[in-house]
Length: 191
Image (tube, rainbow, N blue to C red; front, side, top):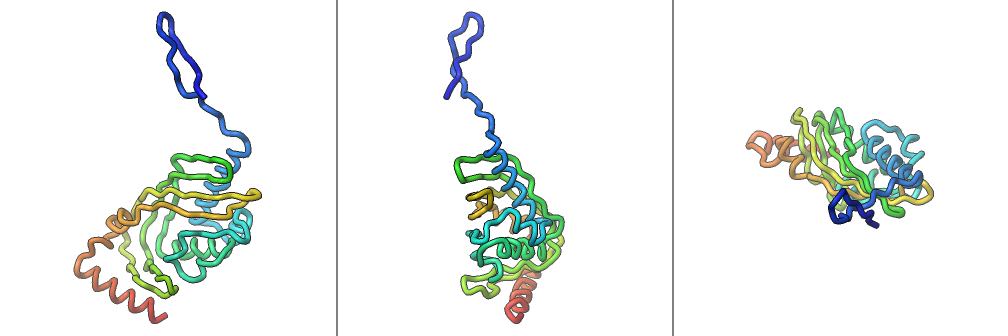
């Protein structure tokens, strides 16, 4: 929809009309922004309040087995996995969009690596472990949520993993760090 505008002595111009968010739409965006922020500090009860019991996180494929289930416990396990590796986690929401049951958030995730970050393979076993570097990072992410009945039922994301790896010194690794990665991976596989 467009709204014609014109100034004195000018031809009418066409500018896009701004549609204010409806209360339902604003509530959906707020719920999803809250869900992203829970990854930094929420407990299981917090996740139970916003995540459907059968919710699916598409991003869990490279996460520990506890994260690969459904519902609040699986999403909470993803949060604990991230918190074990990164301190001072934060998601800043820059822009949002909502259409029907879909909500999208453009964010920046930031933190500092204080623990070993373990990536898991399709079989659930540790595939690669990145020891703590103590470095800070800030990377762009877009989080997509599908909602039903006022709860999150599905999540997936587009992340700048290469940018994060570069900021943390994982890629390209120096010779010393490459040896640390190999040793940390070996330790993670023994657990």
